[in-house]
Image 1 (cartoon, rainbow, N blue to C red):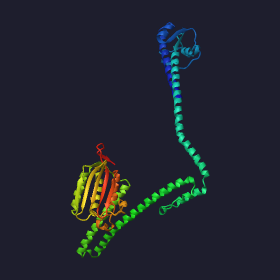
Image 2 (tube, rainbow, N blue to C red):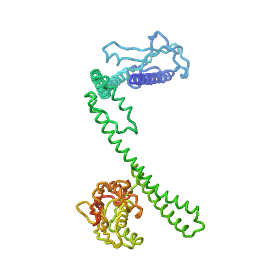
Image 3 (cartoon, helix red, strand yellow):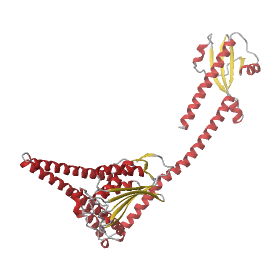
Image 4 (cartoon, rainbow, N blue to C red):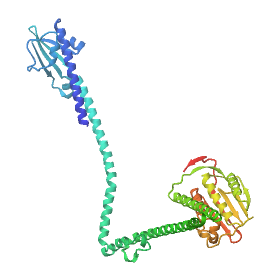
Length: 455
């Protein structure tokens, strides 16, 4: 690129200098028609030209040049050439002249245009430009060398590692190595309990086998949990479907003639359909939560106002329990709808497992940098063996009362998911025959946080 650029500069300079010299010569020839040439020194001083009369030509060869046709007269001949004096590099270049011999009216004129000074300065500038280009190339060469080393470094390390692996592979027992792929090929969804026997492998592969066994343990646990979830969900849906089907058959036989049977069947079908609807909605909520498809709008939520709202709604549909509220002014940064849903789940559980005229207490307070929202009841309590698994799906505090209460054992799982998404957790304290207290613990909102945020 630099070479092409330098050649282009030289071509432009040469063409420009040619046009300049010919223009000077043409102007001088126009003057010579009507005036005799002055002394050389005067011409050089005034115009940069040296014009004199000759007795014979000093240029031997003729160059065809189109500039002669622009003259107002026809010269007898025009010869062009160059002249220089040998006297060192600078003086030689400085002495270069463009010479034109013109014959007109039986006279010979010599016109000399001094171009040496221009050529000398141009060469200096060209040399300086070339030096700059060389320095640029050298600097880029150093940078490119560093970049190439940096680029090829990982490749060299990879080649070194491959060479090391090749050396190690030569020392491995091929029979023991081939057993590992065979074991892995035999593991599928029906044989997730299969494990790799570590003692049968080379020492170099034992760490890999341990990692694979740990991964299989996690996969097996997840698969078993999924299977339990599907089985429990199927069981929960099977009961209301069976009830609906039974009453539908009853209606099909006698419902149109027996008004009592018709009313009973319609009521039962509506109740079971409502139960199925609630169950399906809870299952869909958990499925969306597991796949992170629930959008949250984080805002400042006053827990006392939220408690008043939930208690008012609960008293409208339940007048058989005594509700007590002891709330401090506590604010959290949360999705208001989800926190309200979690609180409603805790209150509904307290209502379901507390006898008529029982007492339910909702309280809020600040403890350090945590907000504590508690729901306490005087109900049947939770068995000690159930408490560790109380947040698992389809786990109930009292299996014997499932159909009476209508719960599917998903409420606390949903509440726990909501708490974890808000960087909080649930705390359970329960005694059989005394009651249960479940506390939702969340970080307290600070004034520096933004009021609204989408998650």
